[in-house]
Each structure stands twice: as structure tokens, then as C-alpha cells.
Image 1 (cartoon, helix red, strand yellow):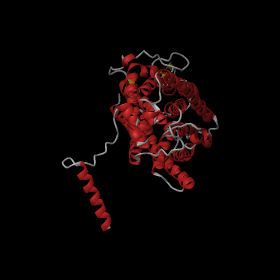
Image 2 (image 1 turned 90 degrees about the horizontal axis):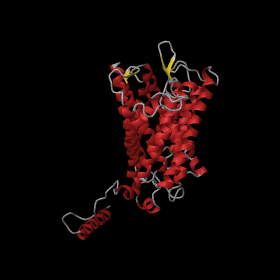
Image 3 (image 1 turned 120 degrees about the vertical axis):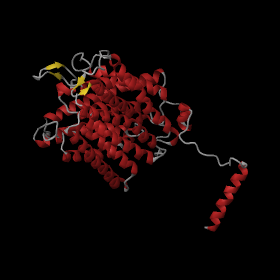
Image 4 (image 1 turned 90 degrees about the vertical axis):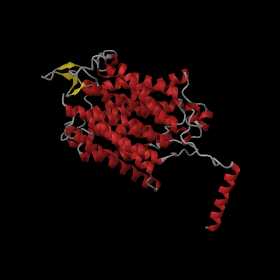
Length: 447
């Protein structure tokens, strides 16, 4: 065990866990004030459900002995994390239980990401049911495909097989472009179809109720993302340093790319666009951060910023109501970052693979494409089925009355903002209102 590596991975796990409350702020600021609590509660609810399932059988499904074909680990081999608490249980240079904690927060944030597509209209209880089903049937198997690498002996012989995308296909996904972002983005598209359009969409304006909350959320996401990407090095080493730098420069480039599109297309660069560009860059560099140089990271980020800014308008063309652009940012951004590895990968980076632009031909590109679209198809089909299952059994969508009045009050008996009364605590209400009106009139006359 290396204590420095262990400390870095524990810190990274804490950073990634912070991303889910950060996502709650990001999504919560983007919705209308009458549904902000419901939006934030879907992120918090995902933390609760997935955290428990991860300890029961989630980790085992992802990282236990492969059942065959690189498709699934034994779900109950480490049921309740049994056998993983001993000091001599190591994953590389860190205790296995530390690795368990790091991977747990990945599962949590992935499920929470989906909720943005169904903002303003989803019931909380059915969302929790869907979250548990989706984590079990979709995320855990896909994470096994992508994150479970073959165990090898000192001579390089495989002693225990892992997932098919990581090993047989040899596609590169350093921190979750496929398992997290394409996976969640495809599920978001499926649920947008299952739940249908919001009342009044797209004719009525549905602007963010608090852009400061959006910016706060984007900042917390960027901060936590260093744990997401650099923490995936599983050690305090040069790979962590390279991925850290690439996460900075790619995100900056994406922010600029998104704002340029807005300026050219709409005439103004917006705060919402800046926050969205940050997330688009973070999504795109996630799979690529170990395989590109900083120049390659800038290219990946800039391309993602431009393409995601253009992609968010696709929902109007095709008629699916992806409320907070999970499809346009996470699905498209995940695809962009995953596929561009096949173009911009350089053997100077830790992954030591060359893409098309560095003399590697199309070998890595086709591997990236197969991995990306396999996850997209699996997630979309299963998510569609699970969404309809929840819809036709317990009901997924809130009533029209709750959606129009306040889904926060209907689902949680709360409001995000309690406005003070015009009446004075000591005087009569009429006197206070009259005095206030008089003061306003006097001030107006003076001015």
C-alpha cells in the first residue's frame, strides 16, 4: 500500500461526491422556481438509492469475477462488501475498500445526470424506483464492460478476465465518457420520450430561475471533476498530473467555443452558455484526458464546445423535450470526446496510443466507435423499457395540475422561496401597506 496514492484517491472520491450536490445546484438553477426542490431532490435521491445498492451488490456486479464474455461480474460475490475490509486487500497500491469508495461516487453521479432531461414533470417516488432499476440493469453491467480490467500475473498472463470494452475491444475510456456520459445521455433521451413534453413546451418560455445557482453548480462540478479525471489515475503520479492539466485546458477551450457559437448565432454571449460550455468541455475530456497532449485537449474541448452548443437545439427540430439539455451536452459531448481519441491520441500521453492524426491510422478510431455506440444502444433500449415499466405500473409523470401550479408543493410539500408578508408584525396590515404606498409615492414625486 502506498499512503500517498491512498490519500489522493480518498480525496478524489470526496471531490466526486461533491459533484452531485453541485449538479443539484446546476440543474436546480436552470428550472423554474416552482420546481427547483424537486429537481434538487432527484440528485439527492440518486445519492441515497445508488449508494446503498453499490454496497449491497453494485460493486460486486462491476468488479467481481466475470461470469463469461466480459459482460457481468458475479453480483453477490462481495455482497455487502464482504471480504473487502481487510488491510491486505489491495487494488494496485491502494486498499480495495478505498477503490470501492471511489467507484461508488461515479455510480451516483451517473444516475443523477439523467434527471435533468425530465425536469419539471417527474414524480419523486417513481424516479427513485427508476434510479434503482437503471443502476442495476444498465449502469452496473456497462461499468463492468468499461472499468473492469483483466487481472494479470507478473508474466503478463491473464488470471481473471474483466469487461469486454476495456480488454477485448481495447477502447480507451479513462474516466467514463462511455460508462457515465454516453450512458446517462442515452437514458435521458429515452426518458424524455417516455414522459413526453412539459405543459406549454416549446411555445412558452421556460427560462432558468437563478443563473447564479447555475454558475455555482458549474463551478462545483469543475472543482469535483479534478477528482473524477485525475483521481482515475488511482495514484499521485504523472498520469494524474497530465489528466489534471488536460481537464483545465479542454474545459477552457470548450467554454470559449460555446460562447463563440452564441455570439455568431445569437449576437450575445450568455452566462448560461458559459456554464454549459464548462460542462461540455468536462464531459468531452473525461474519456480522453490520459490519451491526448494539452494541445490535443484544447482541440477536443473546442470542438466539443462548438458541437454541443449546436446540438442543444436539436430537441426543437426532433420534438423531444430534454428539459436541461442532457442529450445535447452529455450524450453528444461523450460521443465527441470518445471518438476524438481516435484522431488526437498521442503516444506522448500516458495511454501511449497514436490516433489518426499522429500516425496511428484508424485502428483506435474504430475501437472507440464500437465502444461508444454499443453503450449508447444498450442504454437507450433498456432505459426506454424501464421507463415504460415505471410509467405503466406506478406512474412516472406528475399530474398536469401539479406541473402547472408547483411540483415542489405537490411532491414535497415545500417551496424553495418563502416570500415575506407586506404586513407589519406589530401594526395592522392595512396601515402598513398604506404607509408603504405613501412612502413610494413621496419618493416618486421627489425624483
